[in-house]
Image 1: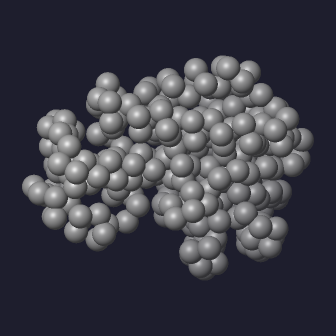
Image 2 (image 1 turned 135 degrees about the horizontal axis):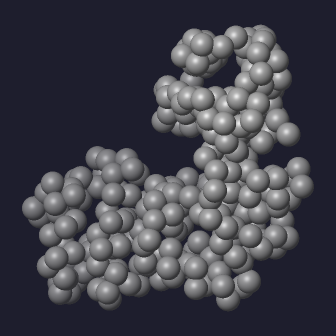
Length: 285
């Protein structure tokens, strides 16, 4: 008997196969599995390719799957119907946030804060999954790379309009990322690009954290992330949290500032000890 854990993300799908002692036998990589974007036919093809790659039959496999876009009951049922039709021995499906929580906390209660291009927070208490944020770049995403990049652009254009001195290094780094050399070209770049490109400007703020403008932006976004955690903590009543996403998973000024703020409210960081693929297998327990 084999176990397969699947992390079906919005940009790629990863899977790991284990034996009955939970020893890793192999890894698989394929395209995205977002249920709101990818067709059923393409998702079926991913699982068939996976089985062929691992050289196993579905009848001999217990599989746990966490997929992007599986936030509603009907989405989970659609995914489990696919697994049923493929004749897996045992199958459980959920969303990608659920398996990330399991990767951080195992079967214990806990929270997960994600700050990458966007931001969102999840909590797990018993079998109940809680969510805060994740409203996207128009209504939310405070504390994310996009938010930090947007805050920087607003501050820069305000300073340029008011003829206020701007740190030359900061302005040069912005121009280098946008591949422009003046204010008007930068404005055109902003309105011709999506949130992922704006989020790339966050690195300028993180590199120049001692600059007054950048420090103000960092402090603002640290507080926004703290508020997400406070709201989630009040609802799911747990004080353990994991981090995901480059803004806080790496050693950045935002991470360091946020850890200090969370310490004040008694929230403790739990470092990840499992992959999301492994977390997906815990759905089967």
